[in-house]
View (tube, rainbow, N blue to C red):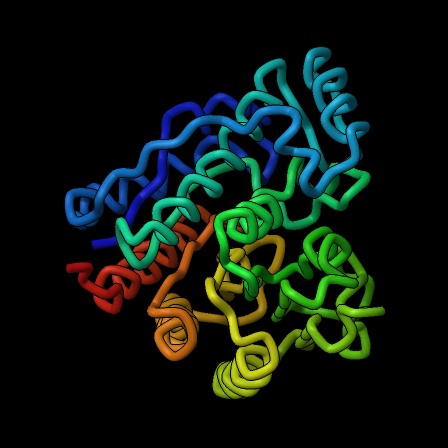
Length: 315
């Protein structure tokens, strides 16, 4: 079975009618319930992260400012609204992703899906930005290292480049980062060129696949397949993490790279195959973007169906 981390607490990050809003999770859960997928999963337990745990990837100023700004219900930047409970919810989201890593590495199940918000992959070591307060997937990677996974591969298929995750691990030889994203013509956040490959000891462990609007789906899949093979061969991961955004769907109002729902099933199959080859199928997937409610929900259903189908049965 697949471990599923979800909690009504993630609805308490109230952003009004902002694209990253409560209704995203509500739409997902309605579809999962209607398709009978929730009952097929093992429910995961978690605890919110503490301040000292956030320090694994963020400077103290990030948490301090998040608390101060969210208490006032103001914006952390032009794109990142908060409410008085936002910091608490973001700590819970990161805690769920870290708990999923603990459970998968302990062998409770071979893979996990964390349906959390706010997203995290734009949050840098020193700044919350782009709808994101704390970088949950980066914190999960550090947790994995603390639990004995020496090498981790993060695969980010959100339509936006995961600039925060890249910044955190850019000089880290033990954490590989692969991002497949729309690029060019001022598309947010403007990073993720193909020649951004890491620095110092981390040179060669960052892999960017910048794609233009209008790319054919078959070409997209080939680009992902080639990049996955290169990244997995270089990193040789003990655990694979996914920053699972669904905003590359053709109907997404923010991203819209032209993908269909079935492409998210294919992406899941590709990533799970890498994990099967390198780390006994160990995968933890963390929700990032996706802003067309129907496409988001359908994409998550396709993703979870494949995690359930392909996950290893523990004995």
